[in-house]
Image 1: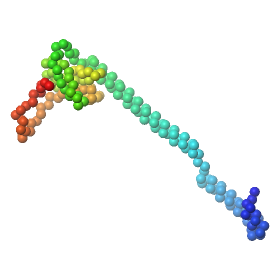
Image 2 (image 1 turned 90 degrees about the vertical axis):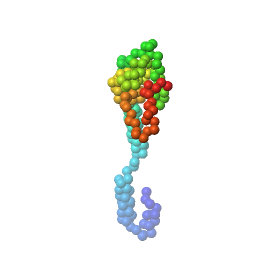
Image 3 (image 1 turned 180 degrees about the horizontal axis):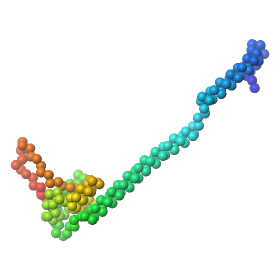
Image 4 (image 1 turned 180 degrees about the vertical axis):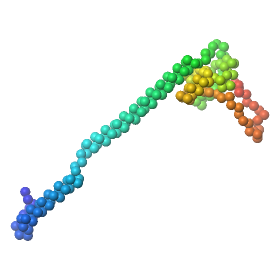
Length: 179
């Protein structure tokens, strides 16, 4: 099938058969070169590849989250074991209410006088386990604090420096103030 326009030009004698064949060959070459330069892009394959990459990225993120949750769970179990094995038992002689601040809330624990003094001196720490608070020795409290500082309250026996121009310097606040 030839081009009707070319046939009309041939009949009119404007062009020769040789010129028509050269034009066809040049058109054919142009089409082949054009198709080589711009190969047909398989859009579905590209979309499938992008979807697979996105899915792999989501899977990596979920895997990281699961590993982090697993690590946090292991740390929590380890802290619970430390508290259970090293907590100081409080008997019925613990009738003094000791108030302290934890997570910006005032909490209370019942202790005896000796325990209260050790807490004030910084020799005992208070650790949270399953919604309740237990007393633990300071080295154990420091180990707990290294793993998760939200689970322990440690009091330091630091002495506060009083400024020279403080008008209330003569009025000391007792450390064992009961609320």
